[in-house]
Amino acid sequence: MFSGMSTFTQVHVVISLIGIGSGLVVAFGLLAAKRLDAWTALFLVSTVLTSVTGFMFPFHGFLPSYGVGAISMVALAIAIFARYGRHLAGSWRRTYAITAMVSLYLNVFVLVAQLFMKVPALHALAPTQSEPPFKITQLVVLVVFVAWTIAAAKKFRIAVG
Image (cartoon, rainbow, N blue to C red):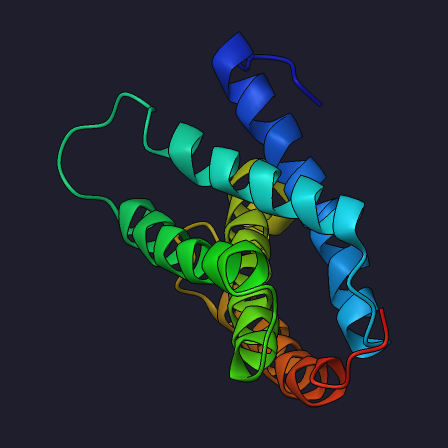
């Protein structure tokens, strides 16, 4: 899995996968109206680290990944403020659910893009990432996350614990 990757890239990938894995746990928790404090902390920290380390790769000029990272950082800042600054009070509970889901979606969006770049079978289907298999996959991921976010925002507004 890591052959040919620098140590920095390996660390970035591991942090990203931790963010996605813990984010999925948190997302299912949102559907059950559960806060899952430890999982939430792991998700938020690892997702912030994913975005921060993503900006540290040696590229020149503005890349689309920088835009995704910037949007993710804004969503994460709001999620962290809603969760820890406002303690999920009132409308901040729904705000947290939405921004946490947006942050997770952006990580999964990048994961799909990376899979199409790095996995030979997927790369063969969409070498420039402008082909239908890539676009359809990203559209399906988006639709799933929109539905999941709506459900999470509705279900998480009820305080269970």
